Image (cartoon, rainbow, N blue to C red; front, side, top):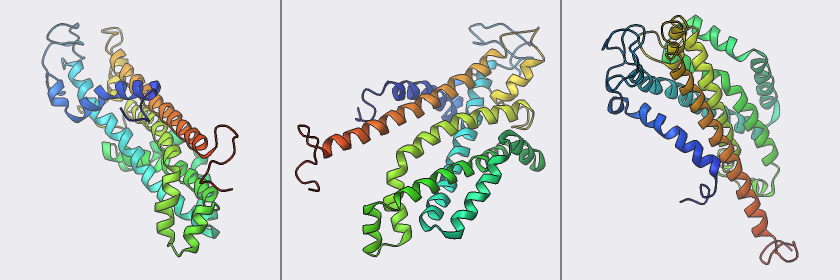
Length: 291
């Protein structure tokens, strides 16, 4: 077992929680017994050996729809998060390292974007272009780019004054090399924490948009539109709305546990570096260190 995973209970539990959902998103056809759009029974059949969680208002298998919805919701939450991370950190590290007017302008732009209520901005983007998985993914990515940009800019400003960065600049390294070789590796831990947290927020935002009818159009399944459909059938089958809501809560919890586990691993790694660099007896730099 890798050292960063050994003894890290939150990270282990988080990965175990997410594993079945990631499997369902990767190969839903191997898990779901039916197609998510097939009418396989009468409406509101109770759970049975044939229909594990029963059927919905049209007679579709609820379990199969939950499994196929995992692909939609995890694709949006992870895809939007990774896209926002890549674009935001790339721009943030660059403008933070270069400084000047470009850094100031980027900060003001992010301030303006962060001033808007997040869900309203996503609602506007999706409503203007039209609902689809790709549009929701792009809208949520745009929504979270300013946060990553601002974070990466601050990290770059704090790291560019370090001795190892200055030594690399003096030796003639290009800015792109300094960002890639020195800034990014030193910020990877905090960035991964932010990625896990943002994935949870993105999942909730995607479910909200889908619940409001701005996600994947029916009959394509998503946990949000299943929740919306269950709202109108509460008195026919109160169990229907529990399952998609439970999936959203469990996956969001898994993302949060992974975030806390990564944060713990980063802190433990930083503590190990400090202990290694110090003489355990005196607390002074060990031999080979700077005297």
